[in-house]
Length: 233
Image (cartoon, rainbow, N blue to C red):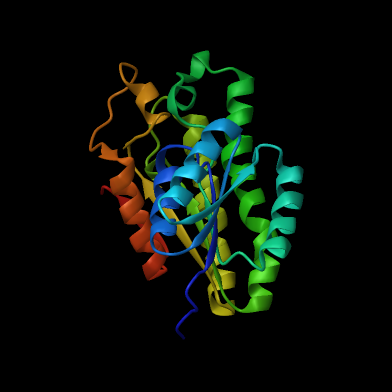
């Protein structure tokens, strides 16, 4: 059955990098976009740029690591907005903090990466499940990582957080797609973003792609309602 076209989207981690590029693409094709991030000044500048270019965007200051507050705020957003059709859970910890050699990795680093990347992402999508099912349509998109597929050195906490997110979303798709809510999982490799560029001189970044190229791949996956997309592999 053909799904209705999305009209309203939420993108987290939207003030820079992949999240910003995805929000820009969604707004350019006519979606009203709520852009969420922690830093208000940079977020507002990104929203103003989209609105200045003829799009329709809103700023939502949000820290997904505060999971209970995230669930409450996003549940309210769904009611206030008239119903969010598309959620892109992109916010997370990466960069140099996600590539610390394990003997030097503090418990705070392990805890924060697992908490933000797994629980924060789950807290982002969970408030929309019941209302999307009630409406009979919607799409949940999670930005995971090729690290979920390929255990590598210096990425135990990061890869584990992304593997957990992929499992959560794959299982969710089994339940939800038949109810009208599609779940799309994205496994990017190395992407040139502010966080990704922290790895310059720290680790090699083979097959590096730009944030704009990754956003095109993600947008195509959204429009196709794909289940799982890996890029650049």
